[in-house]
Image 1 (spheres, rainbow, N blue to C red):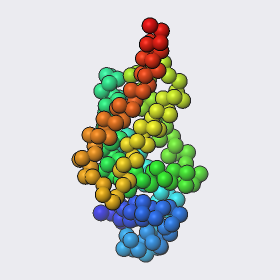
Image 2: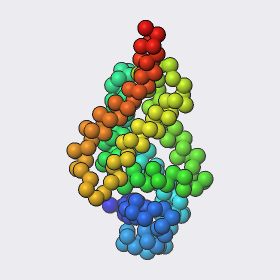
Image 3: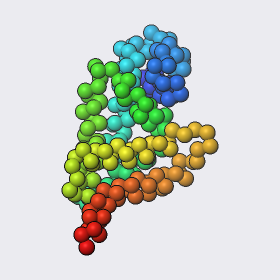
Image 4: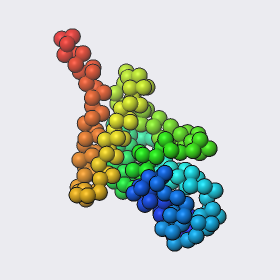
Length: 193
Protein backbone atom coordinates (compact mmCIF):
# COMPACT_ATOMS: atom_id res chain seq x y z
CA UNK A 1 0.00 0.00 0.00
CA UNK A 2 1.39 3.41 -0.95
CA UNK A 3 1.94 6.07 1.68
CA UNK A 4 -0.92 8.11 0.20
CA UNK A 5 -3.20 5.07 0.45
CA UNK A 6 -2.12 4.56 4.09
CA UNK A 7 -3.05 8.16 4.88
CA UNK A 8 -6.41 7.92 3.11
CA UNK A 9 -7.20 4.60 4.77
CA UNK A 10 -6.45 6.03 8.21
CA UNK A 11 -8.45 9.18 7.46
CA UNK A 12 -11.40 7.12 6.27
CA UNK A 13 -11.49 5.14 9.49
CA UNK A 14 -11.04 8.19 11.73
CA UNK A 15 -13.42 10.55 9.88
CA UNK A 16 -16.07 7.83 9.95
CA UNK A 17 -15.61 7.15 13.67
CA UNK A 18 -15.08 10.70 14.94
CA UNK A 19 -16.05 13.13 12.13
CA UNK A 20 -13.87 15.41 10.05
CA UNK A 21 -13.81 18.14 12.72
CA UNK A 22 -13.00 15.58 15.43
CA UNK A 23 -9.74 14.48 13.81
CA UNK A 24 -6.47 16.34 13.36
CA UNK A 25 -3.62 15.70 10.94
CA UNK A 26 -1.50 14.28 13.76
CA UNK A 27 -4.18 11.68 14.55
CA UNK A 28 -4.33 10.68 10.88
CA UNK A 29 -0.55 10.42 10.79
CA UNK A 30 -0.43 8.30 13.95
CA UNK A 31 -3.12 5.95 12.61
CA UNK A 32 -1.14 5.65 9.35
CA UNK A 33 2.07 4.98 11.28
CA UNK A 34 3.84 8.11 10.05
CA UNK A 35 4.64 11.60 11.33
CA UNK A 36 2.38 14.61 10.85
CA UNK A 37 4.92 16.23 8.57
CA UNK A 38 4.86 13.14 6.33
CA UNK A 39 1.15 13.73 5.70
CA UNK A 40 2.01 17.16 4.31
CA UNK A 41 4.34 15.59 1.75
CA UNK A 42 1.24 14.08 0.15
CA UNK A 43 -1.56 16.48 1.07
CA UNK A 44 -1.45 20.22 1.66
CA UNK A 45 -4.15 20.07 4.35
CA UNK A 46 -6.75 17.93 6.06
CA UNK A 47 -9.25 19.49 3.64
CA UNK A 48 -7.29 18.06 0.73
CA UNK A 49 -7.44 14.64 2.39
CA UNK A 50 -11.25 14.90 2.55
CA UNK A 51 -11.39 16.03 -1.09
CA UNK A 52 -9.21 13.05 -2.08
CA UNK A 53 -11.62 10.70 -0.28
CA UNK A 54 -14.56 12.25 -2.13
CA UNK A 55 -12.68 11.96 -5.42
CA UNK A 56 -12.09 8.27 -4.76
CA UNK A 57 -15.75 7.74 -3.92
CA UNK A 58 -16.88 9.45 -7.12
CA UNK A 59 -14.26 7.62 -9.18
CA UNK A 60 -15.53 4.31 -7.84
CA UNK A 61 -19.19 5.14 -8.48
CA UNK A 62 -18.56 6.45 -12.01
CA UNK A 63 -16.49 3.37 -12.86
CA UNK A 64 -19.16 1.05 -11.46
CA UNK A 65 -21.93 2.54 -13.59
CA UNK A 66 -19.84 2.49 -16.77
CA UNK A 67 -21.29 3.81 -20.01
CA UNK A 68 -25.06 4.36 -20.31
CA UNK A 69 -27.16 1.40 -21.43
CA UNK A 70 -29.77 1.86 -24.17
CA UNK A 71 -32.50 0.09 -22.22
CA UNK A 72 -33.94 2.56 -19.65
CA UNK A 73 -34.95 -0.29 -17.34
CA UNK A 74 -31.51 -1.91 -17.48
CA UNK A 75 -29.83 1.46 -16.96
CA UNK A 76 -31.84 2.10 -13.81
CA UNK A 77 -31.14 -1.40 -12.52
CA UNK A 78 -27.42 -0.89 -13.08
CA UNK A 79 -27.46 2.46 -11.24
CA UNK A 80 -29.30 1.01 -8.26
CA UNK A 81 -27.05 -2.07 -8.11
CA UNK A 82 -23.89 0.04 -8.34
CA UNK A 83 -25.00 2.38 -5.57
CA UNK A 84 -26.06 -0.49 -3.30
CA UNK A 85 -22.84 -2.42 -3.91
CA UNK A 86 -20.65 0.62 -3.33
CA UNK A 87 -22.49 1.73 -0.18
CA UNK A 88 -22.45 -1.72 1.37
CA UNK A 89 -18.85 -2.36 0.37
CA UNK A 90 -17.64 1.02 1.64
CA UNK A 91 -19.68 1.85 4.75
CA UNK A 92 -17.08 4.19 6.26
CA UNK A 93 -16.66 6.20 3.08
CA UNK A 94 -20.43 6.30 2.59
CA UNK A 95 -20.82 7.65 6.13
CA UNK A 96 -18.21 10.33 5.47
CA UNK A 97 -19.87 11.34 2.19
CA UNK A 98 -23.28 11.67 3.83
CA UNK A 99 -22.03 13.52 6.87
CA UNK A 100 -19.17 15.69 5.61
CA UNK A 101 -20.21 17.15 2.25
CA UNK A 102 -21.01 20.49 3.86
CA UNK A 103 -17.62 20.42 5.58
CA UNK A 104 -15.70 20.35 2.31
CA UNK A 105 -13.60 23.46 1.79
CA UNK A 106 -14.68 25.85 -0.97
CA UNK A 107 -11.28 25.30 -2.58
CA UNK A 108 -12.29 21.74 -3.48
CA UNK A 109 -16.08 22.05 -3.58
CA UNK A 110 -16.53 23.08 -7.24
CA UNK A 111 -14.63 20.07 -8.59
CA UNK A 112 -16.38 17.60 -6.31
CA UNK A 113 -19.83 19.08 -7.02
CA UNK A 114 -19.16 19.00 -10.79
CA UNK A 115 -18.29 15.32 -10.58
CA UNK A 116 -21.24 14.57 -8.31
CA UNK A 117 -23.51 16.31 -10.82
CA UNK A 118 -22.31 13.92 -13.54
CA UNK A 119 -23.40 11.01 -11.36
CA UNK A 120 -26.73 12.57 -10.35
CA UNK A 121 -27.51 13.60 -13.94
CA UNK A 122 -27.09 10.00 -15.02
CA UNK A 123 -29.69 8.97 -12.43
CA UNK A 124 -32.03 11.77 -13.48
CA UNK A 125 -31.83 10.74 -17.15
CA UNK A 126 -32.59 7.13 -16.20
CA UNK A 127 -35.55 8.14 -14.06
CA UNK A 128 -36.88 10.45 -16.77
CA UNK A 129 -36.67 7.63 -19.31
CA UNK A 130 -38.50 5.23 -16.98
CA UNK A 131 -40.97 7.72 -15.48
CA UNK A 132 -41.40 10.59 -17.99
CA UNK A 133 -43.29 13.77 -17.26
CA UNK A 134 -41.66 14.88 -14.01
CA UNK A 135 -39.78 18.11 -13.45
CA UNK A 136 -36.03 17.83 -13.00
CA UNK A 137 -36.39 18.97 -9.37
CA UNK A 138 -38.79 16.09 -8.64
CA UNK A 139 -36.41 13.59 -10.19
CA UNK A 140 -33.46 15.04 -8.27
CA UNK A 141 -35.48 14.73 -5.05
CA UNK A 142 -36.20 11.09 -5.90
CA UNK A 143 -32.49 10.45 -6.47
CA UNK A 144 -31.58 11.99 -3.11
CA UNK A 145 -34.30 9.95 -1.39
CA UNK A 146 -33.12 6.68 -2.93
CA UNK A 147 -29.49 7.42 -2.12
CA UNK A 148 -30.52 8.18 1.47
CA UNK A 149 -32.51 4.97 1.69
CA UNK A 150 -29.60 2.91 0.40
CA UNK A 151 -26.96 4.50 2.60
CA UNK A 152 -29.11 4.64 5.74
CA UNK A 153 -28.43 1.01 6.59
CA UNK A 154 -24.81 0.78 5.50
CA UNK A 155 -23.47 2.90 8.34
CA UNK A 156 -24.97 0.72 11.07
CA UNK A 157 -22.33 -1.09 13.06
CA UNK A 158 -23.75 -2.88 16.07
CA UNK A 159 -25.95 -5.79 15.12
CA UNK A 160 -25.75 -5.03 11.41
CA UNK A 161 -26.52 -7.89 9.11
CA UNK A 162 -23.89 -9.12 6.71
CA UNK A 163 -23.72 -7.07 3.50
CA UNK A 164 -24.94 -10.01 1.44
CA UNK A 165 -28.05 -10.20 3.63
CA UNK A 166 -29.10 -6.62 2.98
CA UNK A 167 -27.97 -5.93 -0.61
CA UNK A 168 -30.99 -7.56 -2.21
CA UNK A 169 -33.36 -5.97 0.25
CA UNK A 170 -31.92 -2.48 -0.34
CA UNK A 171 -32.03 -2.97 -4.10
CA UNK A 172 -35.66 -4.05 -3.94
CA UNK A 173 -36.61 -1.19 -1.61
CA UNK A 174 -34.88 1.36 -3.83
CA UNK A 175 -36.65 0.05 -6.91
CA UNK A 176 -40.00 -0.06 -5.13
CA UNK A 177 -39.64 3.49 -3.83
CA UNK A 178 -38.98 4.78 -7.34
CA UNK A 179 -42.27 3.37 -8.58
CA UNK A 180 -43.89 6.20 -6.64
CA UNK A 181 -42.90 8.33 -9.63
CA UNK A 182 -45.44 6.36 -11.68
CA UNK A 183 -47.99 6.57 -8.88
CA UNK A 184 -49.16 10.08 -9.66
CA UNK A 185 -50.21 9.12 -13.18
CA UNK A 186 -51.76 5.88 -11.96
CA UNK A 187 -53.86 7.72 -9.36
CA UNK A 188 -54.88 10.37 -11.92
CA UNK A 189 -55.90 7.63 -14.37
CA UNK A 190 -58.08 5.96 -11.74
CA UNK A 191 -59.71 9.28 -10.79
CA UNK A 192 -60.43 10.05 -14.45
CA UNK A 193 -62.02 6.67 -15.10
